[in-house]
Structure formats: structure tokens, C-alpha cells
Image 1 (cartoon, rainbow, N blue to C red):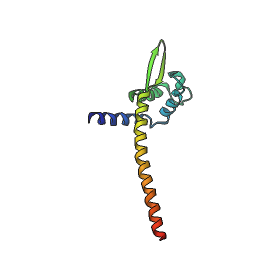
Image 2: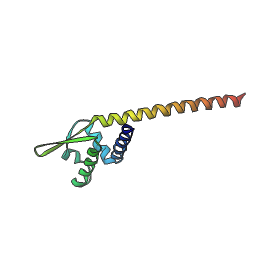
Image 3: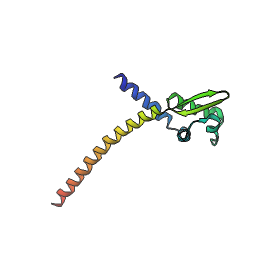
Length: 116
């Protein structure tokens, strides 16, 4: 039971973190490799402190990690939370595909009955 609760909380924070377009853009950029905070901030029309709140939200969800080297803070993606979310989405997709397949068969059968 604890594992299910922990997984649900993880997914809640994961999807909440990805609910913002700025944070999704950061993830898309980091998919190409680690980047300095200053590089990630470039192109976003907001003050650095506001941008850092977005990074903190991603880090709190475990999606990214940052490491300070000298005066530069590098950010990289943590693959485990992404893989866990992908696994959950895959399970949901297979459930719904099965249901939709059964619904299509039922609709086809009802259509054939109407013809006869």
C-alpha cells in the first residue's frame, strides 16, 4: 500500500511540475544535454528569480538535478522519474486501447444486427 501511495504522490508532483509551459520548455532543452542555468534562462521573458522558481519546482519533483561547479550551476535531467511516468502512461494506454477495441467490436456487431 505504501508503494502505491508513494507512486501516486510521485506522479502528482511529476505532472504538476510539467503543467507549466516554461518547465516543459526547460525539459525539452535538457533532453539535448545538461545546461547552465543562465543558458536555460535565455529566451524566457521573465526575471531570473521567477525562472529559478520553475527550476526549483522541477527539482522538487525529482525531474532535474543541479550541480554547482564554481560560479556555474549546471542542470541535467533525472531519467528515473521520466521512466516511471512513462510506465504509468503505457499501462493506462493499454487499458484504454483494450476498452476501445471492445467498444469497436460491439459497435460492429450492433451494426451487423441492424442490417439483418
